[in-house]
Image (cartoon, rainbow, N blue to C red; front, top):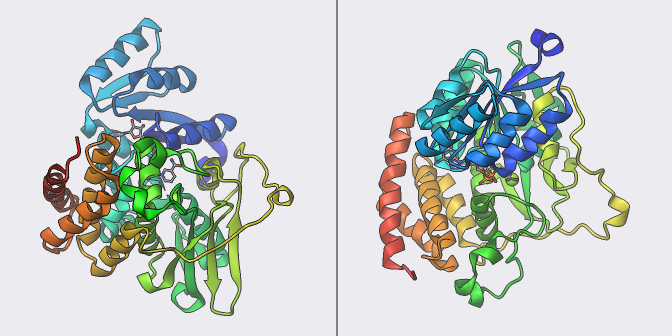
Length: 409
Ligand code: NAD
Ligand code: MG
C-alpha cells in the first residue's frame, strides 16, 4: 500500500495490558518510523495503561470499566498527557471503525472481543487476529464479512501464522492489499497444528481433580494470559485453534490435524499433495508471528532470540490423547456439528475456566460443563453478531447452572 512507505501504519492495540498487547507493543516500539499507536485498551487495569500512554502517547485509551476510566483520566491530566480516555465496551467498537485507524490488533481475551473484532473486520481494516474466540463464535459470518469489506485478516496466533507462512505461493495477494488462497483444496493434503500438550501431558489423569489454578497456569513453553493458559492445560486451546484454522484457510475439518510437540519449536506444518511437508520453526515467542503480521508481506525484526537448533537436544512428536484431554474431542465434535455449536462450546468453556480459576470448579469438571451445555442448547445458525451474542448468553446461563451444581467453593 502506498501509505506504507510514506506514513506510519496507525495501529489500535486492543488488550494492550495483556500478554499479546505487551508483545505487540514491544515489536511496534522497535520500528517507530513504520508504526504509530493511535489507540490502546484495557478492561480495568488503568495503571499499566497509564505507563503505556506515557510511552506511546496514543490519541485514545479505551477502558471498559467506567471507574477505572475516570482514574486513568485523572492521572493522565496530572501528567499533562494528551490521550483522550473513552469508557465502556462500545468505545472499542467506535475506535475499531475510526478512519484514523489502519490496523487493529485484536488482543482482547474471550467472547468480549467479538464486537470490536467484528467492527474492525466490517470496517475493512487490517486486523491482526489473536482473539480466536471471536472467529470460533462467528466463523462463517466473520470471514464472509471480511471478504465483502476487503478487511485483511492476518493470524497472529502462532500456529496459524506459521501455517500462513508455510502456505507460501498458495497465498496470493489481492489488489486491495489482502490475500486469498489459490488451489488449496487440490494441493494441500493436511494442515497440522502442533501443541505442546501443556503442563499435564504426562500427569496421572487420576489426579486431575486436584489440579490448582497455579499448576494449570504454569505452561511449560509459553508465557500467556490465564485463560489461554488453562485452555492449553485442557487442550481446549488446540480445539479452538482447529476451528480457527478451518475458517482462516477455508479447509474442512478432515484436513486439519493436531500433533503433540512438547518443545514448541515447530509451530505448524503444511503437507502438500506431492508428499512435501513444510514446517515453520522459531523460538516460542509471540513477537515472531506479530512482527510477521505487522509487516506482511515484508519482514521486520521482532527482537526474539535466534533459534539455536544445535543446543536443542531433540524435537519430539506424538499423536494427541483424546481420552486424557476430552476438551479436544468436544471441540472436534462441535466443529463437525457446525452452526452455533462452536459458539456454545466457547461460551461454556469461558464460564468453566473462570470458575476453575476462582477455585469454584474442579479441573476435571471443565469438559463436563461444556458437554452438558452443548447438549442443552439447540443447534441454530449464527446469522449476525447479535445472534451470536444471544446464543453466547444462553449458553453461559446453562453453563453457570452446571458450575453451581458441581461447585466446590
Ligand atoms: P491476557 O489475559 O494477558 O490479556 C487480555 C487483555 O484483554 C487485557 O488487556 C485485558 O485488559 C483485556 N480484557 C479482558 N477482559 C476484557 C473485556 N471484558 N473487555 C475488554 N477487554 C478485556 O490475554 P492474552 O494471553 O494476551 O490473550 C489475548 C487473546 O490472544 C486471547 O484470545 C488468546 O487466546 C489469544 N492468544 C494469546 C496468545 C499468548 O501468547 N498470550 C497466543 C495466541 C493467542
Ligand atoms: Mg496458538
